[in-house]
Length: 337
Image (tube, rainbow, N blue to C red; front, side, top):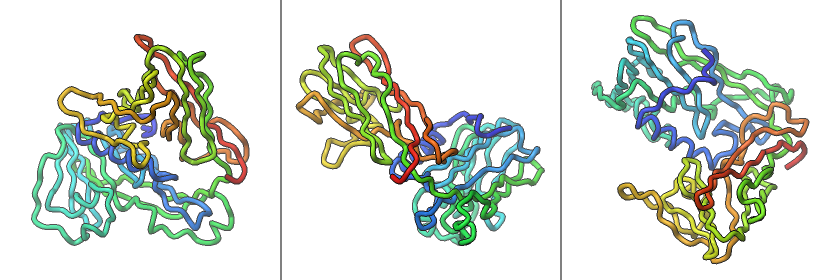
């Protein structure tokens, strides 16, 4: 199984963990992997799974901290052990259980500093159902790249190189095995990813839409002259920004707005009941610029010496009853940022 092409079905708490990790990742360039004095990055890599785990769906998500995602559709429980061999997770069948008495369960269920919860803080086992599906994601500390030492010879060579191994012992039914991988040093790519709008969709002829390049966090600028209000949709297909003759408004219930709202502007307000829209004016004019995470690119650049498209992106929009998209690309431009 190639884990990069399989997405585990998400349960409720599983989705919450993913959402939290993505929210944190927006503030970190390089997916939370350790930098070596600005010369390169250490990234965590998932190796091919052993045959014993071929029936499972396992992914590695790199955000502010590496996260393992597991879906176990089998009739056998997958038991995950900590550094001392104590089982702290049971994924499947039909549900996920966590040992609330194990320090490892709490240490891997948070993005806070590992030292906040001592490794020896475990008590008596207290198994509890933490997810009603056999799916779970956790931030295993054995995958953290911060402690990985990169020899100066590797840095000086300025090439990709393996700089260590990691392993998470697991048992599927009665079969003991491991989810494992390695740490890879990736030299710093010299250049910058720049966003570009290639098609304004239904806004064509009614608005000026431009990318604002020059930063690792690209932005968009939109100046609208149409008669019918235009609504841009957020990353979760929620109303995000609304442009009209009355000005520009942001939806305070939009998770996308919560990620990009500038200091001093109206911020996210929890939705009440079925209400998912609460508009607040952010500009009296008909133009507005904002940081746009969907146009950003902070992953590995495979060919850093030549310009090329590294990402294609879309921003859904609605004008009256018509739906459309702003379409764009993000290009890698070699050279010093």
